[in-house]
Image (tube, rainbow over all chains, first blue to last red):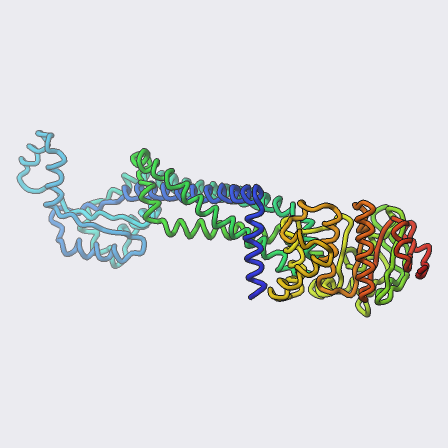
Length: 305
Length: 222
């Protein structure tokens, strides 16, 4: 316990006396944490946009005019049981004709033609959304299949618009998975680069103490007694850099929230504050881990004497 | 106490020690003399296990120092005090903290540290420098601080490698007197130097080295 207390105290004193070296280390860790925070916001915007696109994609099943509602509902239940399906919404023939009239309110000839028919020419519809865009094909295949769930419905289904939308759906799928992969690779590249830069900066700051580490060992200090204060300094770098990073991102996200919400589709300022504790935890954990591991690895090199 | 058994050390293209065999008994004051490159520092490094011999063995009492695991080596080093020409003080620690660090390393309590550090600094006449950093001290003060650090844990052996190399004659004389006093109190002292004048003023056993070899070993002249 005394040893731990001394290690912690030494770490704080070394940090305080480190002056410009401590400042440089905190600065580099802050830059790395800012990169990580930027990536978090970038991912949030990316996934928000992708979700928006995904939600715009759906498949509609058009039923024959006069198809019994209980059979449609039974198909709806069957569809909802599928793991791929996110939601299914039913729209009755009456709702559909109402929507059609609203949509073509200014198109006199179309409305006149509809009135001419006298009865409702539209059937009911089921609007299906899957969890992933790639799963629409499975749904289309399910509806075509002979399985027990779908077979009862084949006589009531008029058609579905999947095949009309297939090209758009496939392209969106390729675009979304491409964007996700690119985002992941970019994240990986930036994080690895930042970690390498931070590690090397901390290694350089410890290199300055190389001789002192040797002296500490020569006067009989244990490895932990030598390594410990450097690791505590690493923790301090991480904590201070976290606070600085979180403060820096306050005005930045406010600016984005005020000026760029329409363009990004997401208010970054609201996102920052509604997810503050999660972001704080990720940044703090990354900062401390980065500081401690970099310090421990850098000191290790000079300890084996 | 210390036994060198046919110890040789060869660096890439230079022989630092050449088949050295010698014994140093407990309580002795041994001066090792020789020109730069004679092998004095390598010899002291061998005792501290700060370097490994190419051939031969070095014993501290019955312990082969180069066979020790890291943890045991740390314990062994706590039984020795070291003084270097370039002082090797911890630059970001005050005089008090430099000594306290050596005491903490051997597990002394805060109370022992608080009571012993001012006392040892008084012994080396540095009471007024308690909270000064090494770069605020003169060469002689730094070396006295290094000696205080070396003796604080009452080691069985003090190794002083060119402790007066960077000092003026007055400070040199002071350091030698302190080392002699330490020896008078029963601690074994090994003093490596190239300064013949110091050896003459000490007047104890002198080991002369040349090109890594012990060429003369003369017992006390006083």
